[in-house]
Length: 331
Image (cartoon, rainbow, N blue to C red; front, top):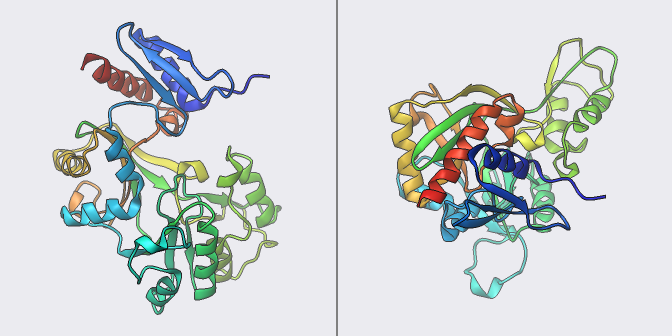
């Protein structure tokens, strides 16, 4: 049986058909690479890396993938970023770096600052991104991160509304609020069963909400509940601090346009990062209409359109895809 074509490539295929471009799966083994052409010019699109659209320069995309470098660049460029530090979580290339950024330094840095948010420096979809509440949890989280990354970020926690801005050539094509995943009680099912059912809607197992999640267990303790408790009918329980769509987060307050101030802010940021297309994730402390209230969380150089497509904004996803394809083939 042939594997399914990834959803990101299915959207691209639909956009190609709609705009008169040729789309062919180039990787017949895994269906993860496609050849896109207008008859004269060609590029290859992939699921994950190398990405769906070819507008960004490779070096700019690589820098954006490094969260520590991105924070440093944006901070020096005058943008507000989350306070925190990066630390090395294994001995790889230790002889090439100065002292002061090892695990022992992370533990020392965190003292008196808990709770903190810890995440890999170069991963996506919120994998191994979790809050920690004490030293033993930080040590454990850094060990987990070491299995997929050389560096971890240890940052302050923000409990503020989170937004995604999708930017192409300095213009915000759409923006929306990202809501953290929640379960809703029915007075019958235990919390652990509701979470198990919730996870069935998350496509990749690595993005499932763990019953051992530090945030979940702390939230249950704070509310004097446990995994065997039953929520009242209609009662909501937030089960993760992160709001990635891939981990069950949801889209709210979707809008197709942004005001002049937001567009100007987005253009300055993308110019600073040398990116033509990106997703900018921000915390907003106050009105979302004023970018002075924005604190940058991350910059994604390979933002997807599957989220808005699945949320009911199919035509917007196809229109934006067609516009980006047009920019590439006309240059």
